[in-house]
Image 1: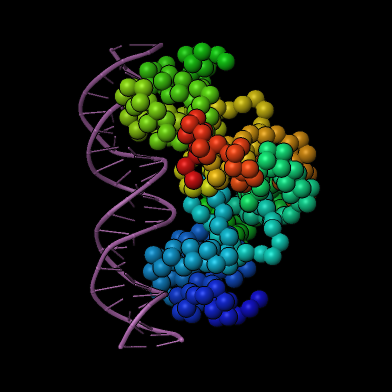
Image 2: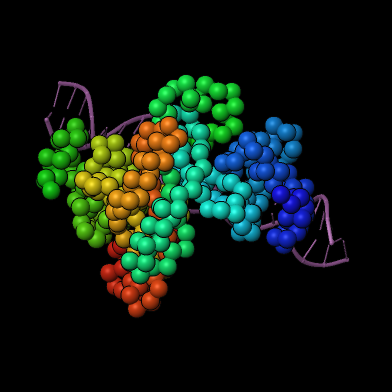
Length: 153
Length: 153
DNA sequence: TTAGGTGCAAATTGTTTGCATCGCC
DNA sequence: GGCGATGCAAACAATTTGCACCTAA
């Protein structure tokens, strides 16, 4: 992963303290699917004073630059994650809020086929699977660390 | 399709004038993917005075009763359609806003398989494909009737 | 008659914007 | 020094809610 400085410059964005802080928050493994409010809250907890408006602005800029990807899970607000090389979709546990990423070539292939059949060029897509843990023991609901992965639903 | 009266009673909802009007709007073939504001606007155009708050309330009740299904296309607001017996997904043309419904058993099957592999019971899912018309001629962008199918994106 | 439904206006929530100030290059 | 970035507060858009009034059962 390139340093945040380099990444920002490459995106044509001036290297500023709020941008570095926000990017570093997004890079933390515990913060893979966070909303703008989440980012703001996490910064506050770190003692970093960044305006909420700046968080929204920077997230939009990062999205435009392709650094992060926006998702619309159920529940209205936008959720962001670092853009990965390979496309993946999401499985969300409605019990514990855990988000699992997966890739499925067969589904991807069918999507292209369907778009083709309707004479459309596929530009992007969103696939979210919502489920419940079959075995409560394996559910992160009671886990300490679960909070950090949770999506507000 | 049962009469709106019967449908409402079956859902445990008192049969009132706003509810009948809203349900009838939703049943019109031109209004398959409409937002709350769309429903409100369509009612105004028909000369039926129904409060916007009531439209939102009734749409939520219909969703709870399973009469309609809510979708979150890109762009924030919720879009509703009558619940159909068979599940289907959506292909949205970003050029003309047209919404195409499709069913794909292979994709459905893969989804179950994936949820299973992660030990989750699949409760529901959402799949939206976004594309652009390959041939402008077949695109409804310039079509008169297109308005009625359009989704605000 | 009465529990539930409606309309209006005000409150919420998530997000964007105007503007004066501030900080990289 | 200048132009872009930031913070704050105000503006917005979509949706929900409190409350007095109305209406179907």
